[in-house]
Image (tube, rainbow, N blue to C red):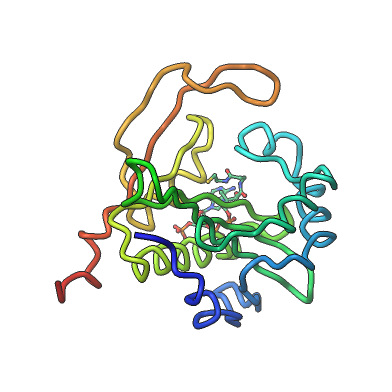
Length: 194
Ligand SMILES: CC(C)(COP(=O)(O)OP(=O)(O)OC[C@H]1O[C@@H](n2cnc3c(N)ncnc32)[C@H](O)[C@@H]1OP(=O)(O)O)[C@@H](O)C(=O)NCCC(=O)NCCS
């Protein structure tokens, strides 16, 4: 059950005027996005980076990341406003593990562009990609403090399925409760035709 890279060409680039009135362009991350992506992660406040699973604000890491894009294993999307990356979302897939029926979703939005509907739109795109790839579930992982993010995922149909106390550590080494949320594709009405 692999990801289907050709879907990225079919679906994107996608222009959308969000209900906030903000016009964004969503497309897959490309090798030539190195500088744009580095600038984006560099502008994410350090408080938010505490909770991120990956910090792409190191130029060498971004360069390696953008040079080794494998759309069969991960579908990274970016939202742009006038050529500036303002949102980043990724659907990951592990083809050879016992998680091969699921995708892992996560995202981050530039602080100046929050509460304008970007994350909701990106998450909708990830769910749609997962659906078209035939995945059965999407999974999202959080630290307990990420309440806004968990609410957003909940509004999009994700359900909290597990809490493990003091299970993960942030960039400073402090431990946090770990929350696992899951979206069941089978519950989606788009599976009604099955
Ligand atoms: C969580 C995050 C991605 C939300 O991005 P966003 O683009 O601001 O989200 P949206 O504008 O689509 O808002 C989605 C919902 O959350 C609400 N919301 C967003 N930010 C909020 C805030 N600071 N306080 C209260 N509600 C908020 C919106 O009102 C909206 O609610 P609705 O669905 O009832 O309309 C963003 O805050 C972020 O990047 N946080 C740091 C990284 C992170 O935690 N990522 C998630 C890990 S997967």
